[in-house]
Length: 170
Image 1 (cartoon, helix red, strand yellow):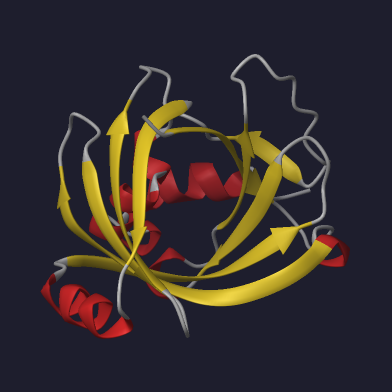
Image 2 (tube, rainbow, N blue to C red):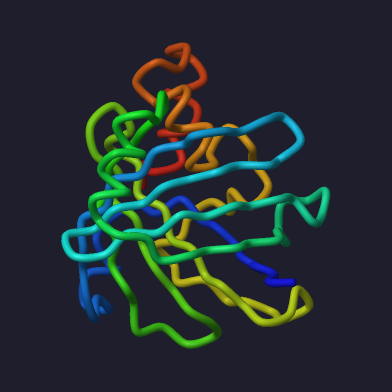
């Protein structure tokens, strides 16, 4: 069974930019999702698409079962048309040590969120995040991509949004 072990961080500033190795725009939609942590997602890039099933494997949000399959672009387009919850972001692959790092710059109603994620092989691995990773958000369900597709940042109550964005201020 495939496991995804991932830590997530809210990012402030642009200190991450020198670490970018590649970039791609992504559009993703959620076909199903529930409070038990099960999601079915379709993701589309310019020349690739995937169907992904995720199931929570730990209560802290660090470990999930993940099954991801490439699908034809036409199928992804059709599935996205059926997905009631969607979001867009630009994903950047980073050249940082300690795991497989990516950084997502959210667009539309989820701007100005910028989130760095590091996928690791073992939950016990110690991660030293860069200084621009200002707040760990691993396990915060309201900041999962699935949750942000249902309740974008722009739709959060003003006080809650202000509290989160205050972490980005110097």
